[in-house]
Image (cartoon, rainbow, N blue to C red; front, side, top):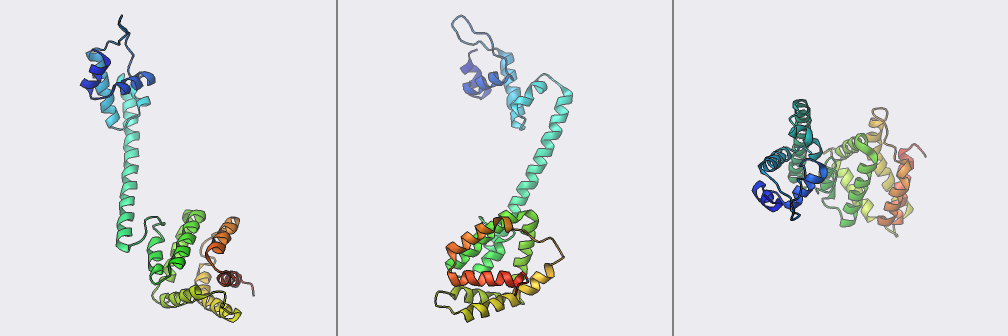
Length: 249
């Protein structure tokens, strides 16, 4: 039979047959006098076995030993495949859980799932500019803080969402959003004190409890982002607050 007939009977393409030849899982038969390859039923059986192995997820480059009936190779490869599939299933289950959580919370899917529900709650009542700033800062924090740091940030957001202080946090955030070129130094200082009153106990609870997330190496990136989205008075407040929480007078 010719290559197109073999491909039709096996349910593959002629291009696939050529690929099998290139990687060595299907021996290329000699050509007839007219230049066409001549296949037989044994080639058909070989291709059908290749399809069966491929359906199990076995890479083509691992097939030769299996096709040559190497029982030891088959056992090892099946163990590897089983482990890979188990990991894939676990990953998919985790992804489904995240999707369900995002649906329930109404959080955006492009945000870290650990932070998304809190950001959705913070965004309620915020201006679009403020919500965008919080979102972008959280994306940067999640990336640069790493897995352990992200867990710390999530715990911080959880504390800020606590019903005991959430109203105060919302009030402070609204006042922060209203800061502008006409805001006085007194207003900036007073709001800094309000911020510090809320954040200082939270920061104090974390001191010594777990390693501090060190973002000094990427401080310029956060500064650039703040400069692009915040006005001068808002930036001044954050500078004052950073010094205050860091222990400077």
